[in-house]
Length: 237
Image 1 (cartoon, one colour):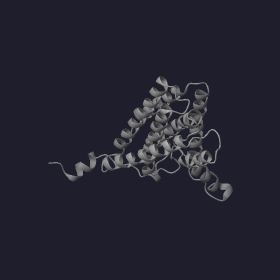
Image 2: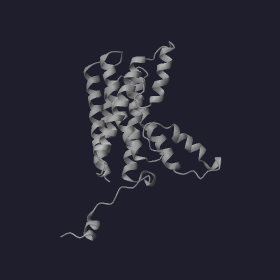
Image 3: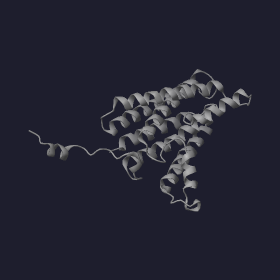
Image 4: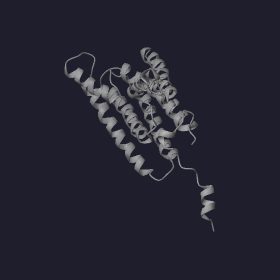
């Protein structure tokens, strides 16, 4: 008969709470990898899909206002498609979290990683087969797939509660970088993490922009799927 003491020796340690995650923790490294992917996806969605955001919903709300005001180059339909798909993704993230309640964190995250890779792959397949450069069903389908992936990602990362690693939005990260700096009288907590978050986003957005501007949107999506898949394979906690 197994004793309680034996159970305590063999049971896996509980996961660290989000605020205690250090920069070299496997979860933090995975989130840095996903931030890199976000840069690629931002380049694809904004430069290649009619100035639509698939991760930054604040941007979409503003874009809708621009379009309604008659500003050229912005799409109400595209932004509304993105908003709806993103909200559906966030809802699915909540369902996944509920389903994995009581299980170890890696099981939930691997489910999310697999979904993200699959959605990027599906979006790439559409762009390879159909031209998604102009308004139409193909473009809206790609927008929906990417926003769905980002909604699932954001809903999941929000639940992890790792400070300064949202993977998609840098506004609060940059605010903290300045407001908590020693110049402002603070102690500059997690300064390296904040800088790395900005750097990884830039590292994804720059090559993503180059690919899109040279007509290689599909390959930018393939790169996103490969990077997210690599994050999945390397993630061990």
